[in-house]
Image (cartoon, rainbow, N blue to C red; front, side):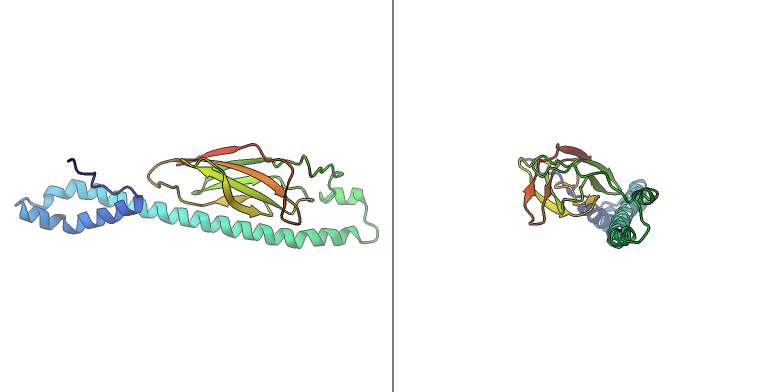
Length: 206
């Protein structure tokens, strides 16, 4: 019976395997009466690969951290800005024309809770999928469902009150690219789904 491949499938496991190989190759070469220089070329490649692996992991972690920091700042800013703008609108002398100069007068609402449908797009950047979506003022939050890899049905991923949403999950098999699909739907103040489901958006995670 043929043996299975000895290379681990997961990337992190491969790095651990490399470390084990490097730590023990000298003893193996000695047992085989081969010079230590026999493995020099391969050791150079392994060490270079491990350096790039560490750099990739650090860069990915930094990108996720920066994204979370930005998203938190965005939500905090909007929480401060909305009541401030509302206060301006109650000030004597305020006019719609004045509000338009700083962009705080929205168009007349045409929101219909029976037909409202989110518009969304997704891109892969910084080690994660970033989903941008529309959310009218009349909507409390947006439900996001996903399907990835070999999955056959959409399942709940998250609810979010402000765009964008960042999907930073690892691939189901981190050694292979993964196709992901998302659908979104609006929710009212009672956390009930309303309107229509968005078009399916697709992205490939390398």
